[in-house]
Image (cartoon, rainbow, N blue to C red; front, side):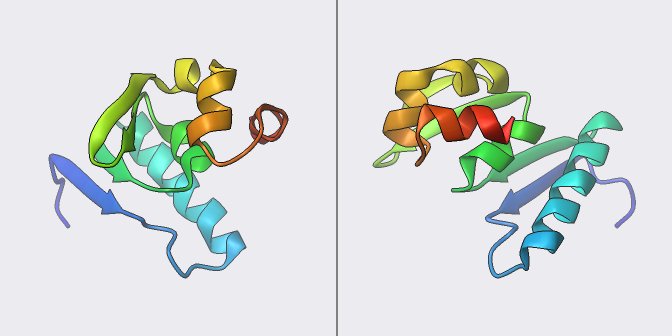
Length: 94
């Protein structure tokens, strides 16, 4: 690939070993830091929000919540309701 303007990733960690998932997200973070625009769709919300600037939570195809990645992670009710883990686990993941 030669300098794409946009990178689209749909469930990139699917079927990867846990160590590969960490490496994948480190690379995504590097690309973000280099200024690449990335559209990342992932059910592993905690990992995705760790490398995202902006996030959207979809429920049945509709936007249920949106905001900065940090803001979404700090919303305990949102974490409990949508992100698939308790607020304590989300805190520990940060």
